[in-house]
Length: 330
Image (cartoon, rainbow, N blue to C red):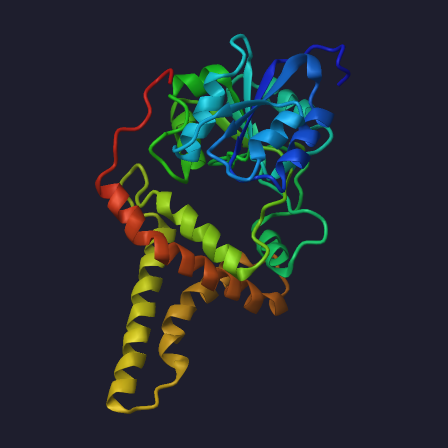
């Protein structure tokens, strides 16, 4: 779209914290691929200590400071600063870049049906990925789809939403440290709007975990804000699997410790029951992978569950003392 053409005004919010390595590339992609006459970019700096805000200003972005709050509220702060008469809100993470045609695809999808409240897609990995990135991405992504598809949620790192709909449901829940995107989409879906994914709204994630340690760290953080139960009261399957994994790991460690105390030589096989859970997930999720890659995926899932298990007590505590969520027109 040429800048002389007018489309729906889009305000893009970029939450950032210590993103000096990626923020410039992120903002340059937005500058290249968004029409300047009907878009704006708002960087919300969540207390960075590495010069993220300075780099963003040098790249010409408007920067708002929002230290000491969860990323859900960081996104809300940016949304509240958006141009008043804008029609659309976009959320792009500071370690992501958009690709040519991103704006046009998002607008075309939203304008095709007024009942679509949210549009976007899951991130893709950059060229020359690590083996961890490769095996995880290939196991969780279908072949690229040419047609839009209704889904349960869109990741907040690559999401476009109608501003009126966003305000109608109260925006992101500021009490959530993680998991704010499925929660938002769930409320938008409950309000009668569709959540639609389309691969043409393409976004590259530069910050995907590249090692097993990074997988552990990511899931330890993601797990802190996970919803333990669905709206109908059912426990989330991944929470059940994580709890069982934690119990089996603790039982295996206890068995090994007891064997040492009584002088037995008990092999590491005591932990095999716990490892069965990552293996089951690898087999279930890795159906698109060659069989030879399933052990690698199982290893990634092992660190996935280790991270989730480390955060499970925090998630459980927060569920017990959950504060009231967002209200309309936040």
